[in-house]
Image 1 (tube, helix red, strand yellow):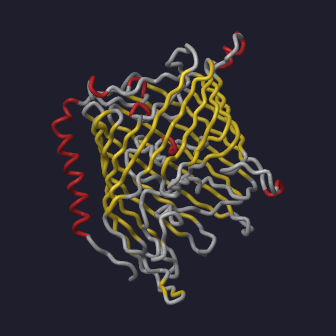
Image 2 (tube, helix red, strand yellow; image 1 turned 120 degrees about the vertical axis):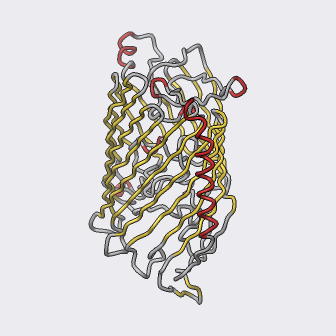
Image 3 (cartoon, helix red, strand yellow; image 1 turned 45 degrees about the horizontal axis):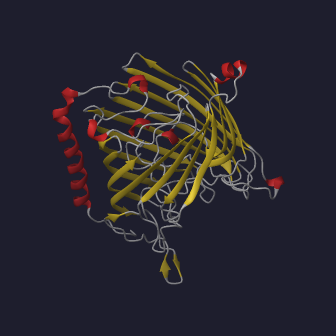
Length: 459
């Protein structure tokens, strides 16, 4: 066996202690449970007058703090009346403490005297702090612009822009016909986080981790930014979206014969049954026939939350930024679909992800297939200040260099505490297994497990 299995007892004790502490805090609060998510839009932990969040001054806006939890597309209903140009700054910061162990059973792969299938030694410690900067401006009635920058990330320690786009939810001109059309129509134009599926609304986005009840994202992390336009039609509880983008994470005019647009669609409904029950169900599709470098499953430039797991002795933080994730390598062509059910009943939330993707690299002549399933449960109490959560994630498919199908499964269990609407602390126990990888692959019989603790600030 390569790599070392250490701290089994201490890791289990830490995980158990964390969950017991959360349960102990929750026990006296159960009788005080209340649903503060009227309309099924966001949560507002009851922190009192000493911790009121920043007022929202722009319209059609998803708050960056806890008011944005369980909000998906930016709301269509007008919440802030227009009275001229407004500018709103925001930020999000996160820091993790990691205590993970990993192991594998891969055969030695000795190159220049070094076994490249030997796992790098890892131990408890703090991960790199991540930060986002948000700028939102109201330009006209129903027209705003959004810009997000990553101030620090695992993959890029320097500042760089994630996305920037124009959101049009109303007509800036006095015209009765346009006003009637814009009651139902929304346009988004620019370089934006594509609206494929619903998981990207719940995942951790670099420094913005407040919307994720746990620490990790999905094994196959469908997240990227592309340049183009989206058109939404929303009537009552029904949502329909169609989009066309350039198909890649960056603008490109070279080699046009090797590129084609990406097409996306989304259809669903989101209904609030009285105040206690909310039901949402959406289906999304994504397709591009040829690309120089499509990044639907490799577009998270921030990297994964689990540092150095199942990486070899030569691993570096930047080059191996996606440790623990599975990137299927569909850089040339990809066709994917996903169905996401969401149910909220009082303090209980259930979310699912049923997904299939087919694609290939430019050197391949046939498509490979990956299937992914995930189920997540959250229970919130004490006026939404405390919660417990769990997620199971399973992915199975074909990699270019491996003849047989391989499987990966992950279990996360933990909880969190909203100290105020802007401050959150959370912890999880995570275990991930890599199955059916060949003995020559470093992931053969691979596994990592342990405890993650995370603190988040967002405003």
